[in-house]
Image (cartoon, rainbow, N blue to C red; front, side):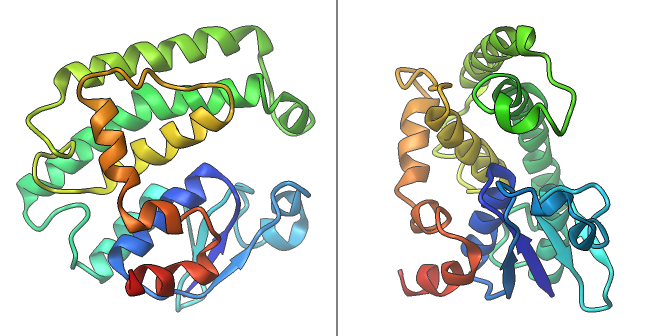
Length: 218
């Protein structure tokens, strides 16, 4: 297998997932800032032109970070980041969907339409006039999620899961591009600090080639 990695939040989600799994997977870096993901060589691998992607052992390609994470969990069930039972897996996917559909997609598109506008305007349809509204929705939905947060310490109670990874990475990204979240939220604020203290949080800042070994030593 070969991971096509990049400096971007979705690839970082996958990096952190791989690090938590303590897997050692080869990776190559796609220079998304130079538009390498829009060139014919990469489009032949992933016609959607997005990162990350995973070239499987049979030569086929999987795209979308969530789908890749699900696949890796199937191949390497332990440590479980989605779940070991149908109930656990359903609970993780419940929170994962809440995170993606209500928060991270709004952060993502607001960045495209505002701070990232110069980069993305030549590539995709953009609506700068929608940016402030998208940012407001993301913050509102984060407060909504904070209100549903259980006893913790993680979104799925005592289990640290892929849902935690996805929310953490996107909130960390948002803070770096003018979309900081309210650190005073009574549940999400302390939760964020707990995730940030995990070795995989810091190690995932680097591209994947150096990541797994570093996490395994920590």
